[in-house]
Amino acid sequence: MSATDNSGHPFDDIRQIVAAMPQADQQAVAAVRARNGELTKPAGSLGRLEWLVEWLAAWQAKEKPVIARPLVAVFAGSHGVTAQGVSAFPDAVNQQMLGNFANGGAAINQICAAYGLGFKVFDLAVDMPTRDITREPAMGDKDAVATMAFGMEAIAGGTDLLGIGEMGIGNTTIAAAIFTALYGGEAAHWVGRGTGVDDAGLERKVAAVEAAIALHRDHLDDPLAVLARLGGREIAAMAGAILAARSERVPVVVDGYVATAAAAILHAIDPRALDHCVFGHLSAEGAHRDVLERLGKVPLLALDMRLGEGSGAAMAMGLIKAAAHCHAGMATFAEAAVAQKLD
Ligand SMILES: O=C(O)c1ccc[n+]([C@@H]2O[C@H](COP(=O)([O-])O)[C@@H](O)[C@H]2O)c1
Ligand SMILES: Cc1cc2nc[nH]c2cc1C
Image 1 (spheres, rainbow, N blue to C red):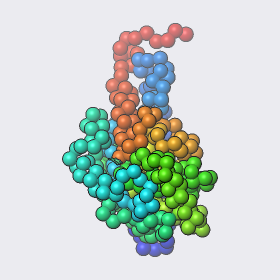
Image 2: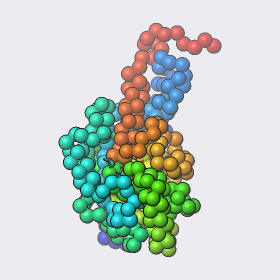
Image 3: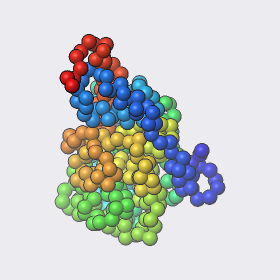
């Protein structure tokens, strides 16, 4: 199925892919549970690590899940809304950080190196910002769908665990606008300090989100219209990548507040759309906890991180790898001649 068919409204293609999503493989989950009961540890003693292996098995449809080619995909975009003075950093940082990623100098390079994770960057035309959402739709509907299709390429090289992250000065304002559109409430509830704006910057962010919601209010019923009107290209691409991963049964680890905005768009289309996703960490961006509760997700880590660039997802991928290793490599009680629990 292609996301760029010419027939009908461009959003129809995305809805078709969502409607055709595969579901969890319960047989693989049952096999993991059975082996888990034999391994040399008290039942349940690896806590959520045990659940993580069930989750991997459910989506990989494998009785022994493998993480041989983990990949962190980082999507970079630029935002016209920065004209409203909503970030502590200039737009130029986007291009400069692309250079830093390529040279191995960013935090994400080091986390990937530490945990043996592949790393790929997708440049969503950082030299061509989306339009300022306080004045115009960020993108046309076709652009948004084409950008989702580009994001779907993230898994083209093959991966068995996909981390989703982003880079985009101004995109915590974009994420806050998306959450305000999806969930309602005061803009101030969804706005945080991002890269570290001062109080005046925070006020400008709230004003920008309020202006964007007022301008686009008659067009925010459809989550894909929310994505096109308010979203950045990297957010559309992340939504595409998460959806493509589902179609190919690749488990996904979502990064922080901004990446969660992409996931929330899919969840608003179909609440089952994130069943193949875990959330790597609880971002320091204040409203992340509220969003994760709405998505019914418990973050794996809480490290007060607020960097983006897939860093929180990558940290969690290290522990997911360890969970898979325990399951695959531990001895059973019989193999190790260890006495079982007393009855
Ligand atoms: O996703 C998060 O939790 C997060 C929280 C704070 C900042 N960021 C990163 O910081 C940039 C956006 O911050 P800002 O202040 O420019 O909106 C962007 O590059 C994000 O990757 C990301
Ligand atoms: C330096 C810098 C690095 C980043 N990585 C992700 N977002 C970022 C924002 C800034 C400002």
